[in-house]
Image (tube, rainbow, N blue to C red):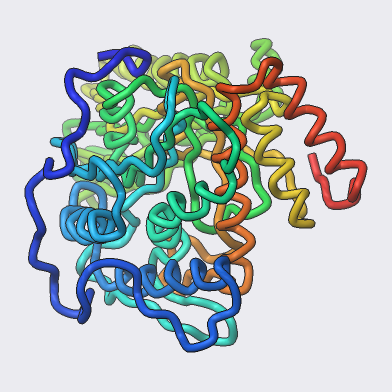
Amino acid sequence: MSAHGIGAAALGPGGGGGTTEQPAGVREEPAGVPELPAGAPGPLAGAAERVIVRTERLCLLPAPPFGEAARAAVVADWWRADGLAEVRIDPTGNVWGLARRGVGPAVLVAAHLDTVFGPDVEHGARRHDGRLVGPGVGDDTIAVAALAELPRLLEAELVGAGQARPVWVLATVGEEGVGNLAGITAALADPPVPVGAVIAVEGNYLGRVTVTGVGSVRFAVTVTGPGGHAWERSATPSAVHAAAGMVSRLAALAAPQAAEGAGVAGRIAVNVGRISGGEAINIRAASCRFEVDLRADTAAGLAWLEREARLVIEELVIEEQGAELAAEAREIGRRPAGGIPAEHPLASAAFAALARRGLAARTHAASTDANAAYAAGIPAITIGITHGEREHTIDEWIDLAQVADGLAALADTAAQAAALADTAAPAAALADIAAQAARTDRSKWDA
């Protein structure tokens, strides 16, 4: 069903299985809100500590794309114990929960369960010098842990808001790598209620307001030939040589003059991340395989890049027909490009929320769960919880001191988006808020 149509049935509180036994080391206490240290200062600090504790626990569990079931079970149990309504795990593996009831198209706040690390990597997180360090802490474990705080924080943010939109939270699967946004795509194809806006959350994106979804197409290309002795059959074509020539031509597509000459606006990139082949140093290679990643920040740019890349592959086959070479390109990934204007009310809400807390803000382009929303015709942004570095390494870290501010900005943004249902002129109202905040501290805004 379309993301703009009502789902066949509302998500039942007992859907997706029942309470699941948790893996050792994840939780020594019953599901729910972890106890805070004595004298924890204020509700936001308490919320931040709960989020950090849960991040530490989730980090114990490997969750590569299509291997997120253990994390999903833990998150679903936590949300039920926290009192979220209509919690379930859907057939794709996403975890749904209703953070706040309302009227009209829903605001969907999503973070992804998966990380780039499999079970072969030692998992866990440690606190050190004000940071949390470990595989996947910021991408995207802390964002998943933060979702359960929204009901409490929205209750304060939306006092007197009247008939605001409902707010749902969603922990998605398949965001990273070969996951190809499988979770969010399935969720938007058959949501429990119409979805009017998506806020994707990436743990280390605090201060970034992503309004441009970088699209990508990925191919695994295999070149084959007859092979032969390096001296006796030196005229025989080599699959490695042919593949190297193809890689060079593909890389040339990213040169600025190539796209500009074709009238393509925006940024594009080409990367061959892996290549392998050949049988021995003294053999004309019979096979070679490489993987190429094509990216662009506009749908038109991505379409041009894909078309030109396919021509490079086809031209090799045509040129070498008499030389017994063949090339096959198999698609292994696709993410749609898209975006919204930086002046869109949803983006304005995020900028205003950050500015109210004195946080620097800038527009940003990235590939996140928001890409799937753009493809479905739903406005979306991506925002963060804290700052961090070294994503996709085992030494990834996030700043713990910023978590409270990030939670406040997330709740503020979600509340503004939910309140749009009640606003007679939402775009103008949010533009006024953003302009007022910008005048207060313009130096902190970075476009």
